[in-house]
Image (cartoon, rainbow, N blue to C red; front, side):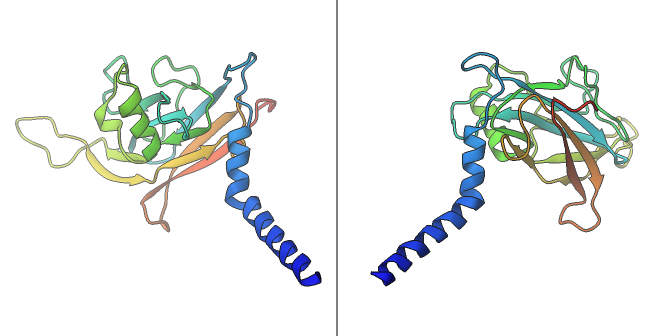
Length: 210
């Protein structure tokens, strides 16, 4: 009887340890409030990008529910085609506007906020055929470009040259951020990581006065 109790206790402890890891994060993410004021409604997340590199950043960012294959992400892009009314450029040392009319500072709150993540890009391609998309910004993670370009063509303007990328970024609702918060994303050089650039994340909850 004692051995049977010990076996059951051991199994319970293994379950508890597993739940406190990945399962716990999944539960927190899937049960977190979407921040809406009415049933089925959603709040927002505010995003601010700070480019602490000497290069222009090109990427797609958005919010989505990763468990819904039919979900249509709320997304925006930064590209090099700043002349286009649908796009805005995040150049060297630049900070995005929190009131931009092009690259949007407010997104619908969802279970995941991503920058160039595989799920985000896949859901945009499948479920946002209504949206105008810049293909150059549909990249994994964040791609950085030298605005000076490569070798100059005597008869044509030089194309900007890619100088590397930062890996995709994801933050989970209920684990990394709540709805109605401000997410600050900083792009930095990374001399120690597998990629030459990285994305640093900072959170300011909605009740913060900053």
